[in-house]
Each structure stands twice: as structure tokens, then as C-alpha cells.
Image (cartoon, rainbow, N blue to C red; front, top):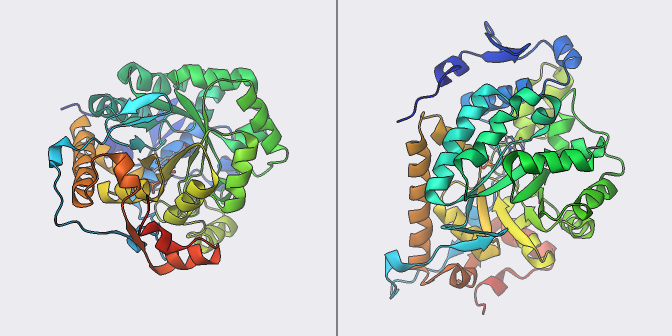
Length: 402
Ligand SMILES: Cc1cc2nc3c(=O)[nH]c(=O)nc-3n(C[C@H](O)[C@H](O)[C@H](O)COP(=O)(O)O)c2cc1C
């Protein structure tokens, strides 16, 4: 079993933070005082380290809203006549064949500790043949020294589906074509996710909230590169108008990341020392489009690849999203928690459990493969059915389909 080095996870929970290239231990608080946060705006890697720490030490899940997956039920088939272990869960997506339709959503990179997490995650991904996104590569554009924390992903996952990551905010601020090429090359990416996180940025005193001409700038980058580009949220999902806009901009894929899982308004509310931002983060903690409904909207209104994500916690959740029309699913925090157990083994175990749960959902719905699962009858009830009706989508159309 591999052990994490310095700062160890134990050290990490003792509040290490990078300053001037050194890891120093904060005595009581992981947060920089507000004046310093504003002065040190460019130290993206410090912020990313605080995010990891907050996600591991606090409950930052949605509070009074869910991803809506409890409203989705399969119809049980007691008379199933399949061989459980012969069910084909593989999928071809973004140019790679995955053993199961699962992607570890982008989380880390940009500092020494994240490098260790990225090594473990990418080794697990390569072993199990699933996909993986990296965290925002902005830190590596600001500081050459942290590029290695991203490079290690491709070094350890030579064959796997690897997705690069950059924020819409950086594009609005004028990310160049050369910088876009640089982030692709850094992980030899199969696709790049552009994350839209206006809520999260607005809860950061130093956040990027100047987004004028964003759409034109993204279209320009997409047109100048042949790589598939994914529109990704971080936990508030996409509305119908967003999906129409995403199509118009020219994105080839959508990574839903709906509300119901990790709340980034919540993470920032905990991190900030600004009372105004803290209270606003509390108010907007549960803001967004629930994952199940956002996936349904994407299925009905977008022709490209759809990744269902945000609050996905097990293989049955994945099965439900595939049946709602997703091509694959993404999970973030469950894998952060698994890697916290100090080993590649814990991540592989989580992937294997998830695989078995997805397999069982196929077995019990008499689905030989994911194409069958996409047509499996669904009963959609509760709030999700209510919202569908408001949008003119008949929930009962999911009960019998070809
Ligand atoms: C520690 C951590 C760091 C993250 N950093 C990024 C990031 O840099 N870029 C990004 O697009 N999403 C980032 N995310 C968001 C996840 O990709 C995902 O959209 C979100 O956490 C919701 O998924 P979940 O409910 O499965 O956690 C991060 C998530 C976590 C937990």
C-alpha cells in the first residue's frame, strides 16, 4: 500500500498551507486573514488546498434539496433471465472505451498535496479503466512549479480517458489560444472541461464575476482546437436556457454537476472570513437545478455527450442517470473520501463496489447492456415529476419506451 508523503493527510488536517513555496502549519485557522486573501489573489493553489481541507473536514453537502434521484425508480424484474457477470457495462465516450460509464469528476492539482492525490486517483483509474477529470489547471498557468501535479495524471494513466479543466472565469479574463493548448498538453487531454461556477465565484471575495463576452470567447477557443470541449458546472446544474446556449456556443458535451451533492456556495461560505460572503453562501447553499431534472433537460435538448453528475453516490444512482439519458456519470467527493484512506486500493474498492451496484441494476431490469438500460421503464414521481410537468415533459413517457 502506498503512503502519502509530506504533507501527510494527518499533517494536512493540521492545517498546512503553502506560502512562498513552503508548506507552513497554520496554528488554528486554515484561512488567510481577509486582508491577505485580497492581497494574495493570485495564489490559486492555496485556495485549492483550503477547498480540499474543507471538503474533508466539514459537511458541505446540499441541505434541503436533493439530486432528485430518489424520485426515479426502476421497475423490478423478478423473472430476469440474464447472467449477472455477462452484462456488458462498457461505453465508448469522448474517443475512449471505458469498462463502466464512470468518470472521477475534476478535483485536484496545483500543489504538492494534490499531486499525491492525483497519483493515487490516476493509478486507480488506469487499473479499472474508467475516466478522470483533473481540477482547474489555472494554478499551473500562474506558476510553472505546480505543473507536475497535473503531469503525473497522464504519466500514471497512459491509456485512460483524461479530461483537462479550466474555469469560464479565466476564459472571460482573456485566456489565450496558446494557454488553452498548454492545458491540453499538460495532461495530454482527451477532452477539456470548461467549468461554469458563477455562484461559487460570487461567494469568494476575490472571485471572477466579470463575465462579459464569455460566450464569444469560448466559441473562439472551441473553433481553434480540435479537442472536444465539455460545459461543466460544479454543483448547480444547467437550466433549459443554459443547455440551448451551450449548444449555440459549440460545446460537444455537457457535464451536468447539478445541485444535490457538494455545495460550492457552502464550501466558500466556510472558507471566507467576509461576513457578507459567508451569510450569502448560507442563503444560496442549495441553489441550482437538481441533477436528475438537469439530465432530463439535456437528454431532450442536447445532441452531444451527456455526463450525469452532482450528488451521484453509488452504482444505482449511475444506473438511474443512464436510464434518464446520460452517457456516463461523474462522482467527485466519494473519491476524495476514498483516497483519504491513504491508498489506491481504497479508490479501486470504491470503483468496484460501484461497478457491482450498476451491474445489479442492469440484472434486475433485464438490461444486457447500457443501451437496454437506457430503455428500461422508469417510474418518475415526487418533485422531479412535478417539475417535468411544469416544463411540459410527461413523466409517464418514461414508463414504456422503445
Ligand atoms: C475538493 C474538490 C475540488 C474541486 N475542484 C474543482 C475544480 O478545480 N474544477 C471543477 O470543475 N470542479 C471542481 N470540483 C467540483 C466537482 O468536480 C463536482 O462538480 C462537484 O464536487 C459536485 O460533485 P459531487 O457532488 O460528486 O462532489 C471540486 C470538487 C471537490 C470535492
